[in-house]
Image 1 (tube, rainbow, N blue to C red):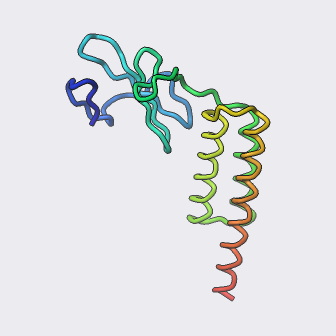
Image 2 (cartoon, rainbow, N blue to C red):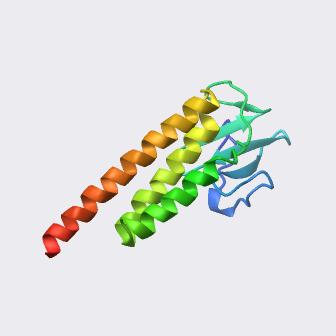
Image 3 (cartoon, rainbow, N blue to C red):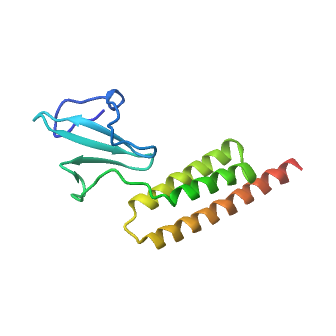
Length: 143
């Protein structure tokens, strides 16, 4: 349920996604009692309520985050990791969360592009190591 400034509570599931939504961030238009619109940005890791283009909690400007093209390279690498090292439900969860963190770093970090790419490379290396450790544990148990 969502209520803005003591207004009528609205079930978030009944609000349709705004045209601003993308594959990683859903945007919902919330009508306010004064006739204006607030937007709720919702990703798997964060939710932001925005009024007049500003996050109501931080006061900073907030818009739908564009996903840099280089991010898709990491998405493909995580898909390869899933099929090569650690598949199944556990591999799916590990790689899905890694993809979500990759997109979060790429779109919401205030760091330079080079630092964002470096952080994502380190994240990918960590996920591959984790996948190898988990896969070897499963092989040790089976074998």
